[in-house]
Length: 277
Length: 277
DNA sequence: ACGCAATTCACCCAGATAATCACAGTAAGG
DNA sequence: CCTTACTGTGATTATCTGGGTGAATTGCGT
Image (tube, rainbow over the protein chains, first blue to last red):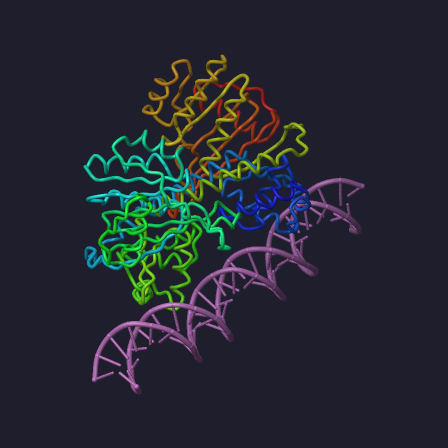
């Protein structure tokens, strides 16, 4: 029954979008019928007959269904595109006023970032990580070393930030997993130094380890700040979730390790021996 | 304390966007500090200190805060713009798959609209009502009579639909509340017949009535289908909520009444006496 | 007037979530 | 080294929202 699966998925999505279970079920049922009475909805949606009315009432208030006030009351759902549009409008309105309110709220003791040493922060979510990546590249003052392992993360925006760094006469080194990506990067950034990283072990899960975790990006800025992100592929529920840690401070342990890694990885023939701890 | 009000509003908004109370409070608190420990968050947000950790953990998973795993753990919120962006991305992903799933789901008995007589449907929400308005204008076959009472509802999209109707050689009559709107409409639609409606009582609340409800649009299509929308202004909580009823069927009571109304309203000097029931 | 279905209302129960407590690790200072 | 205060984790209890059910009311057809 693939139908059931779709049904369930739709109900879950609706709930995640803010509707209650009954409301979601009723709406899905109504989406399949051009028109329906409470009884029909109840049968098709497993919602107790007596509760269909409440659910439909709030759906009406949200602009998702229309009701006909006749003896056997009839209901119909608006077209799905309209529904999505309605939900989107409500959402946008909320986020809009949210950033507004939060903006008016920030003025609290804002002592600029003091001791920025020995920090190690973790964060998650691809968008947050991408944002932090861009931000770090933007704050570079000498060099940017970046190793990419997945094609997806090579976004236009990322290239744009790298281009900006190049225009400020910074050293930009990019390590890639294979020649294909290397060529893409070389085209977009002629002034950057692009390698195929020698760190094969980085690019695929270690054979012995049981975890299917993949390093997806590795960024070193000014030999001072490091960001490492990885994806856990074993969770097929959603888009694989990306996690990252990022740390600052020249003598920060993780930064030191990363510095060594980067050096050996990008120049596999040399024995660079960068100043350690 | 206007600060408190903003604080509360922010928390409510976050909750409406899917966060729990604790999560919302913690995020708002963190948005005011560049960095904080669990204790500080607890004090600033009224969240029990021991529960701050849980809340912050899910916030981290949602990509809204970063955590520093040090002895006294430290937390920081991402910039509000980033947060909004993250939330938006999640939302879009959901609505996207939603319309997809609902689309695959619709194939159920879709006997085209049979008896379309004597129906009276109610709906609410400005966007839904606007959509229905456009749809009705698009389905017109002879004439479109529209009375506008509020400037806001004269959108470009509405004009576009009216223009389409004109190009199909339909009669388009537009009644407006005042000369200003009339001129705007006449500019945009040279071929339409535009009046300043004679129905003054429509355009403002009746003096005796206690309710401050205003009719905002009134649409009659093919002397057959009617849509009336009104706004209740006494609810300053959000944008005033718009409600509407729409009915079809030549001999539908509400349609008959509306037909009479429109006739006397648009041609105040004449005694048209359109064919009634 | 009667019966049946439609609709509403009020209540119960369960799971989720808020609130509190007790305890085990950890850092700081004497 | 020991004390002390504090940080973090887990278990426990209270509260509340919302799902689930049946009775009471309304309205319609016969």
